[in-house]
Length: 460
Image (tube, rainbow, N blue to C red; front, side, top):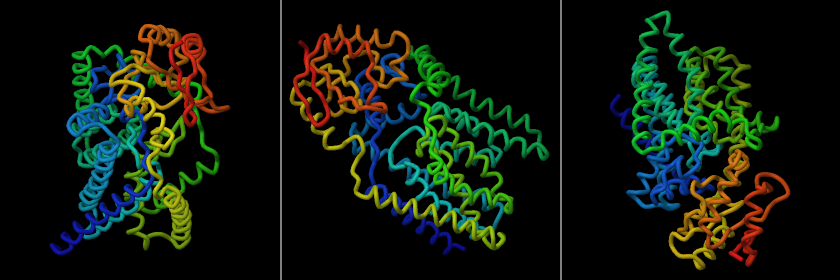
């Protein structure tokens, strides 16, 4: 038994090392907000009051503290992201082993846990996981909620759910599987006691957050952007609604087919299926694969349980399972080949070239304005926006009544040293030209240079 335990620890170490090597060699997505927002916060800008942010703040606070300690840059962003991913790997192994240890023999539980991590790695990468976004941070929090619910630690489950909601509002979709857990326990215990503890835990996080946001004087701004705009307006905004094609939907849900089939035969996966489904609901209304990230640990555990119980499935079920996983493996393999050595998204050569130009023509903390281009240019050039508050150059923000007028006034006051404007496209987000801001630029600035798809405008 001791020898098997040591062997499992060694094996999980090499599995995590393999995952890290894959992450190092594949294309990394450096979402601009993950450097730009902390960058402004470290310069004294307040989130929500000085920066329009439609997300809750916990990840940004943690990331800003990390940058404060280790410096801010692409290397630090990659390090933070990969530490988070590997921590999720290990937490997945630990949770699966602990929970299935009470249902199976210890060696069988370790087998399920190892299989879960082995399934999780290709899932995590395929579903846009090599890059930090709020959904990625929800994955370990969802696991923590699930583990504490299964252990009947309802207070801590509520605390972790509160932390998840203040990481991203789509943690709301964790509530249906949480409710399912309480309903499943109704025949054995008094569920209202558990619900009460859960609500107290979640409420505790809410109260602490309210106090902290109020102390910094940004509670009203937080409510405006993260709650009123982020929950009630943003999901229905023009350009924000994007549904998948039939092909995209089928490919993305192939692993679910295996879990649904197993659910008919194996009781052990029935608790996982609601989590695997509802935790992925953040993918609507704007379909992007990385929104599946909170659901993947449960999908991986379910597949691990299925793989360790193949003998309990009928021949037809095993064949269907094998076909679905084989098709998915082909899709994943093609993506791995395509993304191998792919560099860093949003740090393409043309972006770095225009950043070099801006650095050569500005001083540190000079005010510029970036239009129709990514806000990471401010970070790359050590400049600050000419608008305060800063509102993303995206239609669902800029079409809010009076926003463009307020930004034009702010630009008129600050008179940015230059404006970097991406060339407009014929369709998509890159085609959006806000009329009031465009009018201000045309009346007060003149085009002086063009650099690989970017225009440089200077005051007339």
